[in-house]
Length: 333
Ligand SMILES: [Zn+2]
Ligand SMILES: [Zn+2]
Image 1 (cartoon, rainbow, N blue to C red):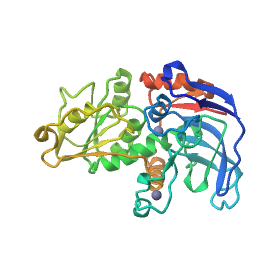
Image 2 (cartoon, protein in one colour; image 1 turned 120 degrees about the horizontal axis):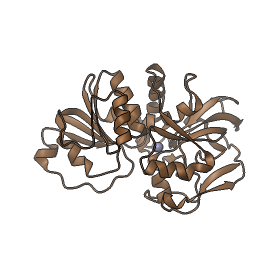
Image 3 (tube, rainbow, N blue to C red; image 1 turned 30 degrees about the horizontal axis):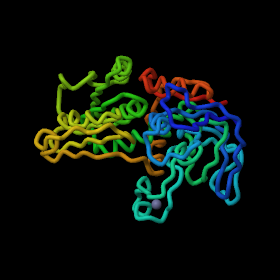
Image 4 (cartoon, rainbow, N blue to C red; image 1 turned 45 degrees about the vertical axis):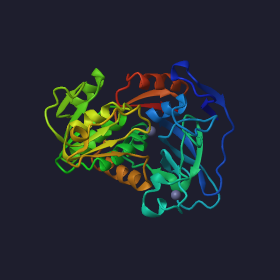
């Protein structure tokens, strides 16, 4: 099979992903093999490639928003059949035995393994995965339209839950990439007002088009206090900024997997009055299923830009430079 392989961590500008011919994987026990149709790109892929995350497996095929069809079934599978259209997300394995797995927090499992990080991902023609970690894709989504739901959508869904946004509440979003443009749809569906702070001019235009109540490049003229805020940009300096616009009792959820240093906080300005600062770590399979249900009901529409598999370096360079509106998707076949 063809795959875009990373052998050494390097800045994406040096095009470190190389198109390789690799053996097509065979599914193991309770695994299925998926013929990949497309795979969305994500900021986490950039962090994996550039070496920002610890313990990355090398060489690795990145990509964790995979849509395709089951084309081989391993021994002992009873959930999926040949030909079913399915998706694979970031969460790829959990132990099922630890205190976190036992308390519906498998996203915190000590032995969790992730797609395109610990195990081969979707920048390829095939992948194999335990059938228990595969999602069925609702009919109403095309392959390309479904890919962003698998990370941008699922993480957006969990970030929104962690932000404790009340019905008809006010939500501020920092950064308007692919997750944020899912969250605005989820939040507006719940009758909420959404305020978007993002440095990219085209991202501000998209946020306005998608019904943001207020859009700005920073919070200098921010018009209100909000119940909840979510930071998607990997910029630690935004944390005090976001805490300062929270209403009493408000919650800030930080959605990034990686973040630059956080400046010192001032207790009275940033935290007192029971403001909460919380992170978001991966997702559970329950989050994934709940997101797909909500996405089909709303229905969530993802804005996408497609690239060929061999253009993965270019796609990620565009992502890093904020040149993509919505989500970039590699069309594999
Ligand atoms: Zn576990
Ligand atoms: Zn992702």
